[in-house]
Structure formats: structure tokens, C-alpha cells
Length: 328
Image 1: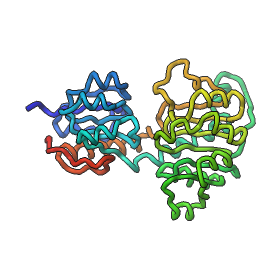
Image 2: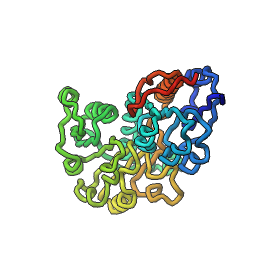
Image 3: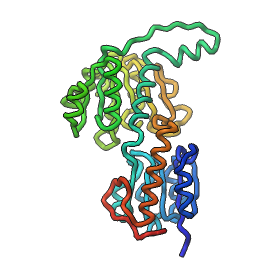
Image 4: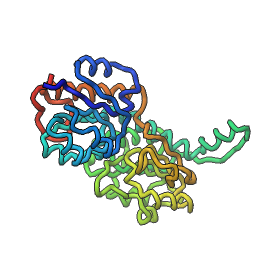
């Protein structure tokens, strides 16, 4: 019988010290480390040699899963988003997929406000000018009294709402699964649709999953319905925004600023339109990358994996597939 082999791809897990390393290594399994997120081509190259994958945002397509089977028995996702994984194919093949809900909502909400404040007060431009010896004094805006519209009032969206209220903002939100108790206790007004969020908000913060319905939800047609000078924030997925349309709206001034932690291609090519767009701040998908959050996510991902290796149910699972026979 071959020794159990695990493919570990998430760089956050690998780069931050913590008990998750000892927990995984104590299993005695062979751990192969790669620097993700890996494209489909690299995943296809590696597929077939592993019993389990502890993955980040690697492209785990049906083709990858077909090549990985029948040896692959477990997928443990570091983080929440599983849009890079063909969940339907994994379910059909009887591969359980665990994930880590509830571990990074505070961190991402804080990063969302870091982007917002940097945009409205021109912090990046001013700090760079000052460092270069240029005493540049630009005039910014307050966010107090402004309306923020939140698309997706899940764990992260709720934390954004709490912080927005603390800043004196009016909060409206849209979510298919509406939490009336939270909205009432925190003074959040329910919007009837995403269209209403787009029309009424001074600041729009996107916290939705990537689905066929949300892909390119911000495009020329919907941007036209927004207020002139609207600020857009995206700490969800890059693909919910149509890049070319947004770049054009930034150039024209229709969109007053874009703060994003995600892009439609990561890492981006040197000529990506948003890298040099006007009033645009893009960070390298590090919204959840704090020491505290990484340790929480990594520990949960490792615990999920360990449970599945033992033939037990994980702490949280995306699909309804029973654990495999114990591998440890």
C-alpha cells in the first residue's frame, strides 16, 4: 500500500507560523508543497499522485478531478470561496469537500475599510508624494453621512455594516437570505434588489459569491445606473466586475474610485487595465491575510483534513459526501 500523500498549495498556510504545521506533520503523512494558486495546467500535471489536497484558490476543474481519481479521496479548502473548484464533479465522484466558514470575516471587513479610507483621503498618492519629497496636499472626503450599499449581507457583509454604522454611514444592503434580526438590531435597511443598491449608494461594497448570476454584475450597463463619482469596493471575486468597463468608468470619472483585493486574473499580467487605472487601489488578495486570520483558517483546514483522513465528518463541508474509509 502506498503511503498517504497530501498536496499543500496555499501559500498563506505555508508562510505563517502556527500550530497548524505541527498538527499536519504529526499525522506522519507525506506532504508535498507547491506555491499556489495553481492554474489548471499545473494541477493536471500533479493530479493522480495524491490522496488529499489542502488547496487555496487553485483551479480544480472536472478534468483535474478525473485525472486525480481514483486515488484522490479528500479536498480540504483553506478559506471560504470554492468557485475555483468543480463542486458538482467532486460530488459526483464521491470526493468530500470541506471548507472554513467563519474564520476571516473580521479581517476582510477591516481590509474593506482600509481600501475605502485610502481612496477617499488619497492616502496612497499623498504618502508616495511625501516620501518623494513633494509636500502634496490633496483634499479628500468624509464618509460620515454617506450611504454605503452592501451586496451580500453574509458574515463579511455584516461586519462591514457594523463598521459602517460606527463611521456614521447610512447602511442599505441586499441579500437573498435576509437576516431580519441582524438588520433590525444594527439599523440596516433592506434593499429590494441589487439594482436599488447601485442606484442609491455613494459607496458600494461587494461581498457576494461568484455565480453565473453575479459574474460581471458591475458592467457598463449597471455602472450607468450608479451615482456619479460612486466608490466601488470589491473584496469578493474579481470576476463580479467587468474589467474593461470599470477601467473606462474610472477614466471618465463616472466611478470615483475602485478599491479591490481581487482581480479577474491573479496574479495579473503587467498590462492589466486596472493596475494603472485612475483612482484605483488594488491589493494582492491579502484581505484575509493577517496572522490571526491565517492561523484560524489554517487550523480549521488542517482539522477538517485530519477528520476526513480518519474517516470522520469534518467541521464544515460544502457537499453532502460521506467521509472516505480511514486513511490513517
